[in-house]
Length: 212
Image (tube, rainbow, N blue to C red; front, side, top):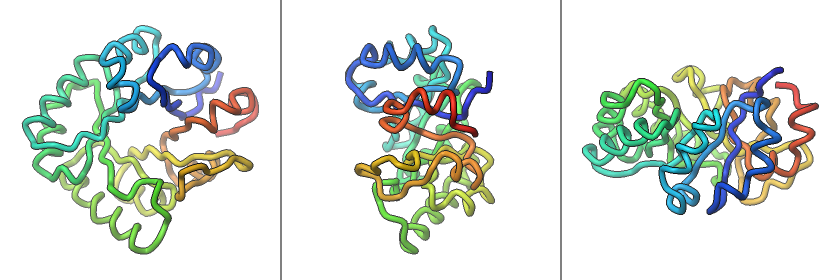
């Protein structure tokens, strides 16, 4: 069975809201993403439960604080079993350094630019992403959350690229302004994709027909 390089975004207050989808997707996709809404509702137990069930967990907290706090939160995230953790690059190089130097072996640090997929792709956005990613590169963090429009250029800086804003060809883009299809993202150099509603609404297609 081919496991697709996709993180399923668990965007809800309750992990139990996804019981059906998680059973269907088990063994077909790489992992799941736990964001702020779920984490602040159910806490570390959500990550721990997913790990017990065999999932790779991407903890998307976008940490943005002073170095000591970011360092401590990074250690705690590793202790509860998270495999990936996001840190806002705007926290600064010192905070990124503190996270990377003190993380557990099991966790990978992903930098997040302020130019997320809710912003349209423009030359200004590209410049902003590049500026942020160069700071992240200096800190030697593992990878970045990369908007679809910047995948090709970012691949020159990082070997680990996780890309949100993924939509199937006929999907609505909803609140996203910087989007692409799963196939194009992987062809451009993304290593993992983040999919939420688009995956949830098309599970059978993604499992049986999507070729990545």
